[in-house]
Image (cartoon, rainbow, N blue to C red; front, side, top):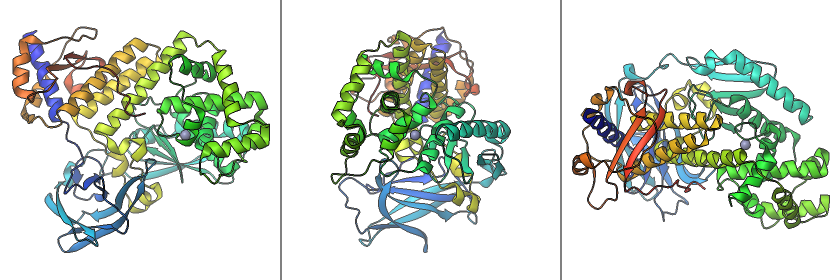
Length: 542
Ligand SMILES: [Zn+2]
């Protein structure tokens, strides 16, 4: 047992060491490079330069140079769903003619002339992880779609069945929304998780990989994104987000799996999570993801039930912006024109319907666990895979990637020990959730959150990474989740890992039934032993 405990210490300390943030703050400007993770000779490197708070970006550009050679320059502008202000230099640095080793890049703020430098180490091209360097873009055309994928990935292996799924989902929606395709839909299969697994833009981008911690719900995600595609084809004017997303979930019969939408929305009231509709309409994406989508979907379901599909569709496509720019006001105006009711009256009758429902216990438990799950995913992405976080996701244009022969931006993602362990735990939580094992799902999620707390508390604890090989020792631990003080080892841990004044005493991360070298998959029943650590899921993603 003593040896076992030692292994646990080593595991957690190594996890702490493994947390190397990809963001470097030079002179208060911070930088993210792409592709994620290590850079290799041959990479075409992009830069996101984020400004410090208080900086006024108007009229400024960032210039990036290597020695005397300017690699590129870009002004500051909003990026992503969040509209984060940054200067984005897409594939500005072609490294194919360089040697492995450190390179010093110079960043200059124009016209002020403020200059700072970043040193980036290029790894030898021979070390590029598989399926690179042979991986390249390929395409398959089906009835509905042009399926773009990268060779050597799960999508290539499963492309025939993916084409079949796409054709079925598209045919279903074409009939339900009475829209036919004049052109095939471009589909892009991404071998990494980005955002919540799907985006619709100039194409439909879908994450497709083995052990996807969002649950490999490909048909459901495709259906959802196809709704957005047909919805755009059907036209309209403002098409407020609350209805766009509500429609996508409603017509897909659930968000990430089939769900009873009205009873599930009724559970929102029991859990005191209901968001007033005006708030949801005006600020849809900043709301808790699962709650916002569910509430919107149930609202669409209620309106279709009350007024019929045709009347709802006519109303939805006849909403126009109002001078105050608020979606809630535009919806209010259109509701009065089409149905003779205000938005407040609509919400009143919607709430009446929900209050008249009794949410079954399993529906409520599923909702509660789902919200915790997506909050945890959101927290993980922000902390350890920021390019995946949907508000600021790194989502390159697939056509540009094909033209330039770039696959690394979709293939690589942070793969440190902490990423692998947490993603494996999320896979576990997702399996538990989908199997209706809500207690187990929540235990695992609690573990992930504790681990994220610890990683935040000790971003760099100065430990030697050379302890990591010891983790290859086989770990065998009992079932269950336990919280307690590990007094026997606490002295050692404190001396090594605990800064003075920290409230963290001891943390041991144990994953049961696995051999460290097998991460991932699968980790069954990951557990964390913590003393004097404040628990509670964080809702800072709402
Ligand atoms: Zn959507």
